[in-house]
Image (tube, rainbow, N blue to C red; front, side):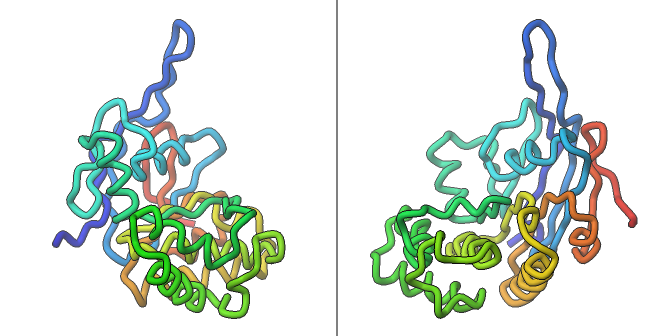
Length: 228
């Protein structure tokens, strides 16, 4: 098995607007190692979220390709790409996107249920990951009964429950105070070491980026090394 969990080659994304076009990404190349924590920073509108969507097969590039654990997701049809996302990737967003009507255990078990696993097995694994993120006493609490930091930890458990090779995170601490932000950062470090899960984190938070293994700057549609 390749040591690269993500291999992106010559990614370009162009949007047509009226009679003109906007080139957001201009030939991005990226490789992410197993267990690596990578931060991608850049100004608002630089294309960070666009890049994350391409890496996660939520959008297709105008040209270029993305391999996840050696599988070319850009060449897949929609259903196959969805199956690959469920098997290989986890997602964490700035706003946790937990379903309000479900408790923490049900929210975390949901990706496994979508995969077709039996409810009991799905909930057992969901409980394991909620324990990992320190929410063993909050399993039956709904999102409205959890603090901001707890909701984000539940979202991380949901991203990890399928045991993906890589988690893509879009501003995962952007809605948190310094204390909870630091707690999430420590959690990501622990999980990447224990499970060899890679994390690609898009962030405006330079202090968070500085604690990652590597930081890249997205500027003018291309990635470059960033040294704080």
